[in-house]
Length: 320
Ligand code: ASP
Image 1: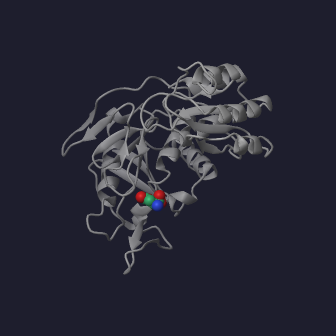
Image 2 (image 1 turned 45 degrees about the vertical axis):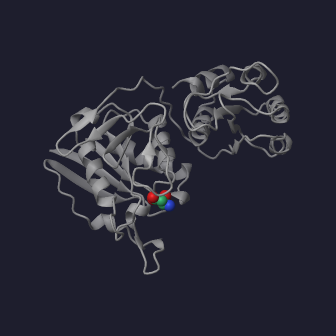
């Protein structure tokens, strides 16, 4: 018998549509009363929050992380239901800060409980299947939706409304659920997991664009921020003016992390001219490999909380 802890946090999977077609949250999470029967699985169900995922931030993620750590010796796996808007961030935070070998599986829904074609209970059932499967151990945090398994490290929400919203553009889908099987296609390279104690840091994320000037960056340099993430152009480049703004931030010892605003691919220094990635790196920016802006922000937060020195912070953000 596998003992699985279910933590409900809210999101569309716990919401319902009213008569005008607007989707709303009820006072209590209705999933608490759903009886899910999986052979040889014993469920303990808790409603840790009942929040749309836009209301979930690093403090909630830390609370979830602590609940999972406390469950380590008592359970064989954890399932978390969560709103899809920030699911990739919570999954990435947990993946980056928890080194437990049991499966941690997150899921959600794109259609609320009483909508035609609601995917909530199906995804919940799928997540329980994956969490109770022996092959799911030691894989970090997994995201299960729409018959697919994704690694928290690479998964992102790709569509506003489609039930097939989660994808892993860089690595590809990690596995599949079929009627009778759970199939994993690959293992991920080992990752450095760091603890985290405090999550109150000011780390804005800014998207680069053609003609971007340095004004906002210079303003931010005087606004007491702890760090900055820029979704740069292409492989990791900026306009000349933005590069000057970045220089200003760096001169004030504010770490600047570069990812790409492109949906797919890895950011790395390639171009050697003003604003090009090579010169940005020479100036001291940190290239975060293969993660998007919202994940780089969490990684910088964790690195800063661990007081990594400049060299280690570069290495930490650079690793896959
Ligand atoms: N806005 C919702 C949320 O993230 C979307 C969802 O759950 O699908 O809470």
